[in-house]
Image (cartoon, rainbow, N blue to C red; front, side, top):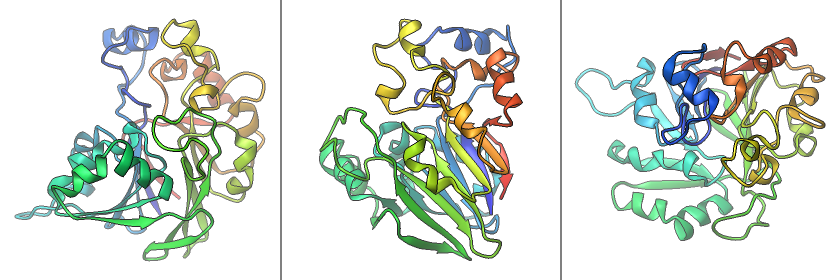
Length: 297
């Protein structure tokens, strides 16, 4: 299968429009090597012709335009984008659905918990249905679901204690990861852009060939230390990379061919290509996603 990283930053992108933290200043003024990034989303294909979108970010129009494989054929409207799989109901993952309304119809795979928020909480899906047909496919964690040409997915629950803005915070399926498998080769990709506790999903990572994993914050108190928020990374539903129990030490012990951090917050120093934090990640055998990265799994 083929993977295209359409966007690799967390909500707000990089640089974030209202932020002057050190990485945002550096990417704006060019004082240190760093590349701008749009908000997190990937596209997956079994054949480089039919593509499936995982999360629809607010930057989806720019992301589609930057990827020739998703451009419309001559003389037509429409792109070879078959469906959207949602990991959660966060605005950063779903606002792009509204921007896809000109497509003539959408197929959306989401859990009941996510669908409930998008209908009764944000009202996003109800708004979208006023513009185009929407077909909802329920995502049931643990079930194998065929997509196309031997490409299947299995969702798995990602436990979180993050405060729910809408609906019941205890509901299972608020956040899921996706394990996509190419049945022809047996190779699997795991997309896990938000995870609070890796030990809770460790069994889902076994034997995968590629892992795209939550790289939101370097340290747990990153936003507090910079005076930008009053909550830790864990309190916002994200396991930090560094520190005791952080993702870097846990992931470095796994035998996975390729591991890539995705969904980096604009404050994360690994976005600076010459930072000691970036070197530490690379020395442990992990990569940092950038918009436009392509991976063959």
